[in-house]
Image 1: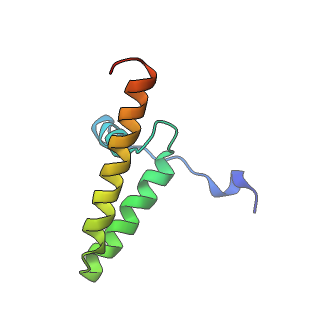
Image 2: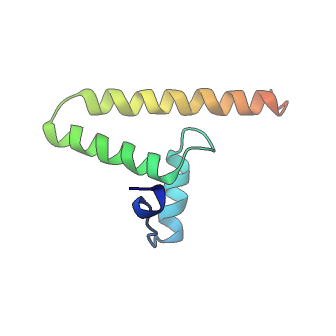
Length: 77
């Protein structure tokens, strides 16, 4: 199956898009990747493991590191 057959379009509210944007670790991360992370963490939460919290903390740390690197490259530090 080629890539065209695997891609679809969905309609989301502007606020939802904005919230998804805030969850991106880096600006090139696709919405599909963000949604896959959300679904993965949701499944971890359903199993009741502490792994979901650890995963969320790791994502926050990556996001902070990438934000710092972006600011450094733009000379904001």
